[in-house]
Image 1: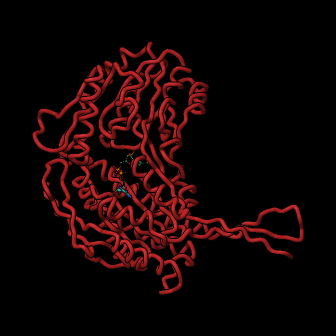
Image 2: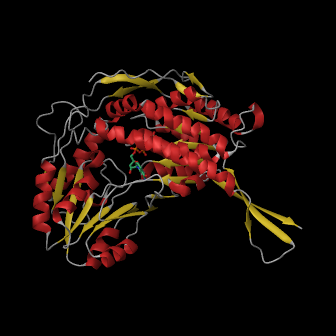
Image 3: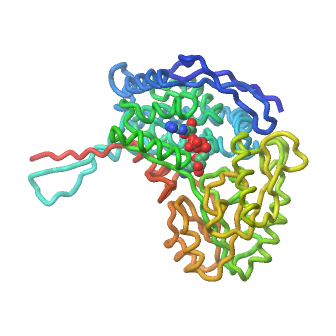
Length: 489
Ligand code: NAD
């Protein structure tokens, strides 16, 4: 399918601005490896200009008064953005699919989620007005206390490529709802739809400087944002390695950060499950978005009593997943996002082979596809818990399997990881599900499913998967300072 990708500039202070160094980054269609356009590459000087614009937009200086506008006023803009996103859904879905390799249907669902998320935070922005000055009960009558919730200020939002527009929205929507202004730095591997978000902000007349969008490389555009003295907070989603760098930079000026990082989440399948349903959830939990999901349940623990039957079905079904160009009818799996990611995933598979693991299916490029960063859905058994494929985040279509005998053993293996993002348990025994839910060291637990996600429910990890919560009311709190006010009466 031919789609033309608009040629955009950086979005600063409500206008398109060429990056000062005039550098651009090619956009590669991962399904064909062809260059389909380019995006601007910001550097530290552009970051300075954007931060200045965001600071001016925050306060009364230029009359935009974003921080002091009522929640209801801000909500109007969020709703207008949601409406435009819905209006431009077909185009946004195509751009997302061609930019990051997602099947077109999936990309269209993401766009619905994006619009829903803006609508949801419009509701919360309105509700915030009614929550101000909530009284605190004190033990002395001579004093009265209440709480003001105030925007943190100018926030740097740094996001990954796996859900380019959705991950940006999880930050932009609550950040603006809270009254903060922002500089968004999407991933250099997939920024196209975020630049369209800039265009939408322009169309709906969002006050200049409230949201600035700078595309560019991490070290050149992300790092100066993370260490900028006039940025009040960094909200980051990406790898644990980059999260560590951002935390280090922010620590120098005691800047708050929230970090949504990597994962290696377990899915525990007990012997009492409906095997077909469990196979479906296991496949969905690991291969959705090509396994390029932070919470992908990529470590499968299956009870030994059903292991043979379960694994046999799992492999047959995995082999039947349609892998093709994202625009082809019925595509379930597109390419991985980039040449770098393709090499990285294949390297993990080779290491697994050399360490003696058994590749039950997949393990390479699908024979019918000559070009593009395609990798077959790969299922690996015969692993032990010290192998790299079991321990490290692969972020690709690779599922590793181990069997277990007892509930305690399953919990021990599931928690034996530095990560703590998600986890899933499949069983008909409600008591057992409850015990496993409480025992799993994770920020999100799915019971008899894997991966469903709602704007209303908190999202985030424990351990090296990060801290802070996005989505729901927790997502709004990420961008609010709590001010205590106490009066002597
Ligand atoms: P990444 O860490 O390579 O990059 C993320 C962002 O950080 C990009 O915008 C990048 O340009 C920027 N960046 C890179 N170096 C930087 C630096 N030194 N300073 C500031 N910014 C810098 O991650 P990725 O490859 O884009 O995304 C995949 C990772 O994201 C996986 O580990 C995945 O688990 C994680 N992720 C987590 C969640 C979650 O909710 N926990 C969601 C999606 C993705």
